[in-house]
Image 1: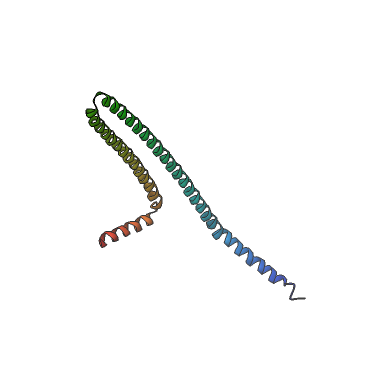
Image 2: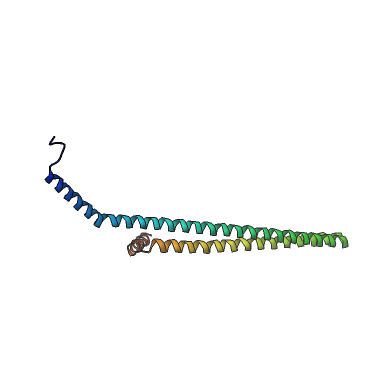
Length: 164
């Protein structure tokens, strides 16, 4: 029966040891672990919010791009329609002169359409590039917010410059 029930002294020292270990864990380990978990949760929340904002911005840029493309196509159709009407009017006046004039007007309209289309594409590329730069700045600011990471990044850049 003595193997099953512990001695009172052994029970006292076991409780005292357990209490000391529990107090030490609470004082030195529990708070840092909870802080680390909270920081990780905050980082994840921040990353999710940034991703959602980026997704909204990309959707907005895509919608703007589609709107601009529709407007460009409408303008192109209007310009082509006007060019055809002008061509028909000239054909009524003089067939030979009208054919030459119609070809000239259609070529000019196509050049104008192409240049407006190219200008629209260039504007969209410029906006996307600016947006990408803004995102890159935010990411670099987030990634390089600690001095140790900045020094490591600078050292790597210096090594790359020396090697090249």
